[in-house]
Amino acid sequence: MKLLGEAGSRGAHYSRFDPEDPAARQAWIDAAVPIDGAFVKGFREVARRHGLAIVATFLERGSPKPFNSAVLIDSRGDVVLHQRKRHICFFDIPEEACAAGETSSVARLRTAAGEVTIGIMICMDREFPDVAADLVGEGVEIILVCEQLPLGRRSRSRGCAGRRRAGAGLPVRPRRGGGELSGTEG
Image (cartoon, rainbow, N blue to C red; front, side):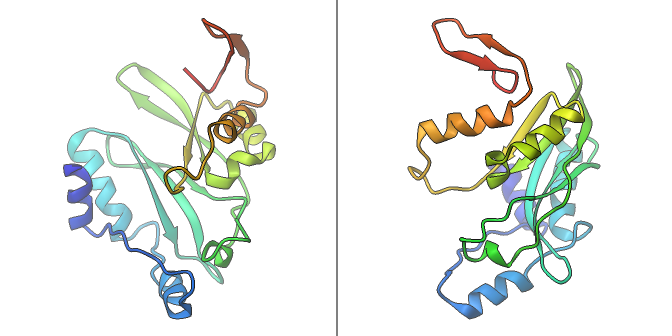
């Protein structure tokens, strides 16, 4: 939590959104930030200072619409992966105001245990096999899923289905005590 507080003091912030207020919706869109701006820079500094890899999600400035985006920052503070959400929740305010990303890619992340190939899915992307298939085709070893849902809104069965889709094309092996463990779990 201390690290998040530090990132906040460098430009990161959280605000509550009222979807029924048109002015709040426009303020949300206007608050979109560039990938090279202070918000992401704050996370980069924290990652570099503490030798951590961090995923930061943000509303990325875009034209004509913003993007729901995430970046993977390595322990040197470099952005090694930039992902824009591909499947927008057009039924959800304010996200329906966002543009969809077009591609998914992976990055090699150096860790103390060695290098690993990382991909990112943002929320609803986990429900669509094309995103997982693209990441698998790129050689992904770990898929990070960034999402924000109120506590209690997501059922356990839906969560398992999402992880199952994310594991499309990856090997499945038996789990001790029953069930199965896909290549994305464990």
